[in-house]
Image 1 (cartoon, rainbow over the protein chains, first blue to last red):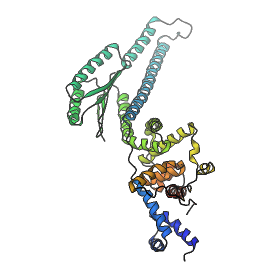
Image 2 (cartoon, each protein chain N blue to C red; image 1 turned 135 degrees about the horizontal axis):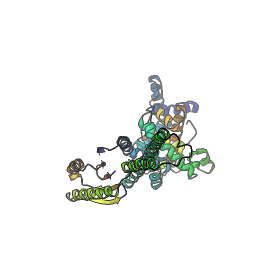
Image 3 (tube, rainbow over the protein chains, first blue to last red; image 1 turned 30 degrees about the vertical axis):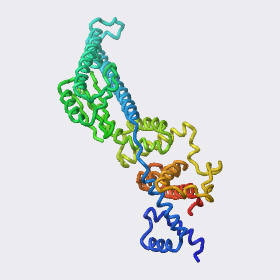
Length: 225
Length: 195
């Protein structure tokens, strides 16, 4: 009769056996032990069943809502980062302009630092430099109006497809967001048309398209500078 | 999943760089979102909470992605950030007691309770598999995660150790003990460590 301790020792090998960590000699010994010990055999069967059941755990579906939320959250971060970059450039432009003006003044008006009031012209130059900088970076009202025209054209394109449904539309200062559902049969043509549309409209910055079998959806972003 | 990107000409180089780099990151996030969500769900166990955690993890990954040095695989790195985000969430919610089996045992958790009447003996195989999948979620996190990472996600001991920041020996012992506890929950057998 097998000693209980011996059996316990063999039981410790069950996990290693399951994980493929026994060498050939150990496998032979363990297999031999299994044939003699119904307890270990049952334990092994139980563990193997558990491993199989866990491997067959159904995959979880990512909720569509989560995808939207994640894309939206990333987009917000992106805009924030972009804003910081623009602010850095704005500050850099301002400081450079200020430095150039100061150096210019230093040479042009050596006595400027000795309490002579600031002349009109250099200040005007500084204001001009600043206003040019802000025109380069900030969108104007005209540009936003143009974006709305582009948006209308884009919506006309959506209407030309029978299965395209615009779930939501959001107009912001510098961009318009669309969440669109397209049927699988029209998706390839739709993408081709979008690409053509994209080439025609120079102002369209980015269109991101994500397709997934079953529930197809699209995240489209139009950015306007 | 197939992803198509159309990026137009940028008026400013910095903005083009920003868009392209970030769009690649966005693509990575969407590709790994099923993994991120499933890992969050394995840890917090509640679908609504898992969505919040997954979103938080995605933002962290998105922000950290430019600093990814490739010392581990991208999957392992994303897995680790998601596990960290999920555990941070449990800590914030003060549900960290889920981490300890000993604490649960002190509070009356008794895997041998069903020893005399095996409630699963009459179940069909498929039903029993479902019970395994249910019962594993009752294990404390420190056993549940290595077990699921090994059996469901097919990760190696080394990868699990890297993700959970624990030695490989600890990973093995937690998986082994987790198996015993789970078996005892299902079939009512002893849970002594090592046998």
